[in-house]
Length: 167
Image 1 (cartoon, rainbow, N blue to C red):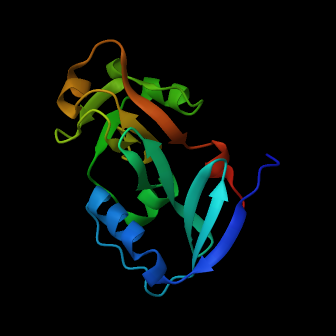
Image 2: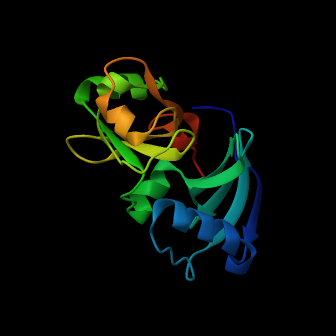
């Protein structure tokens, strides 16, 4: 277990994070209703988080176009996102679980609207469960056709310190 802790944990009202929730909602194409939830902001490893009922469900990610809000893997699971994903075969899973970038050869299918630089999530082809969050290096169409090279830069994965975070 890591000694790294969640810092600057502060309860917030929904109206204080309404813009962030709206941004996440638009990015994953899911209507989020957090009106009855206990909401907090926190900071973990150079990253701001939004905690919903004490579970880190959203994180802020630094990209070329600025800081963007995106769900954590637990957020993807909780909110049932369907868009902006790529599915990988069984052979890619052990590498992703070690934090490796996703290679194009392992991608079997990807949303065609994904563009280079977009935040996205990677799922298991067989079960559809989220494995990692990453940033697209190539478009979704290109990703599905690749036979070599990196397709997605991995940012957060099942088993990393954010996933293991005890709140």
